[in-house]
Image (tube, rainbow, N blue to C red; front, side, top):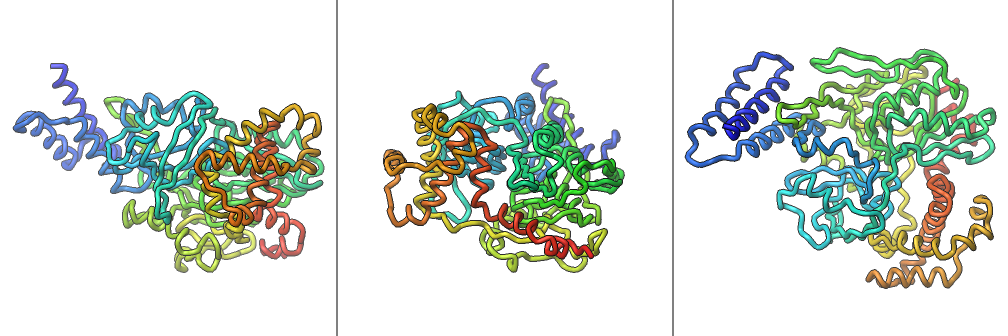
Length: 535
């Protein structure tokens, strides 16, 4: 009887789910009953025993894949672990991932985490973990977590398939405590320009922002840079609360609506403490969701300049619905629109695979290197900003006002191999541990370290030797290509180890072309106003 009750619960679970898709009605449609009836026939008449739970989960997963790229099914056992978020309090490698057709796909390396530091990227497909083939094996989310999570300081090796790379890429990742803060850095770049770097939008984001502002000389801040590069989004309200700071009147920041979701608008409160500051927002192809809401509201009201590259294009709102067995469906229930009425979401009407392919084309077609490669939508998706009437486009992310190409100048295969195999972090951990007292004594203030610290020739030899130990053959030619970048990253990592993430960005941003472009925009007030169309 217990088994039969469990089977019936599975059938009811699927029927309940399908009824939700049919308008959230308590009255099941004919189509819903057809699915339930079919499962009932299998249960009662099929020649062999059938795993109804497995069949049901496959049906739900396949149905959701037909809807849009962001509606997903989460099994009951995975729901139980969902409150232990991948950006939260645990030791691991720091990634958000999905499983598609038995393949582990990296959705996003968590900012500041071990995976990001070795160069794991969104879209990478993990096929081997610690010499075990994990592709095409029916691996579950829980199985992946068991293999990737572990005590701080332990290592895990992964092999990934990366779009555009002919060979498997090998990474050695040292597990660490995964950072939970959404604000990575906040400091004054010069006497009047404040810089803030956010890795996500969380419930604590606005408070972190306010606390950071309070620690800076607020009366001197005339320019603000909000860095949302590689920020995959998060809590929508956090992005509108952030935008509040930059408006001194009531402005609509975003609205959402769907077939079964009434239009809901989010309005600024009109008491922005930074409303008089000039603003630049930094974006790239990995800025998504809540990041796009923030950038879109700023652009639509001609409030600030967007600098960088076109954002990801995720403008769908998911609602969470529990099913009878404790599993969950994250179902898209509405779309986000910017104040002009632009839809942020990239097209997905040709299916999931085409949706992913279109995103990957950005890397293949040169969009990351030239603004001329950005395929703007047709005139039906052309909008005018709400103050100065500038042309902006919907139908796939936020296009920047000032384009900055991806920086590939200092990249070499040698540099890439060092990064992927964790050599930078392995070397810095040992170096900082050995030299911590000496460095802090010689450079009691971070500013002294920033301005004067240099690695010795022996330090560089030790770093190269560390690479050799990891099987990476030294190439003088390729080292020379990447030398400046290698030394900058090593110095930034030492700063992070001895001081913190804030200091890491203070060093890394010294030669960041997108930050430099933002500062150039601020330097010419006439050009700043020209970009925004101000009279």
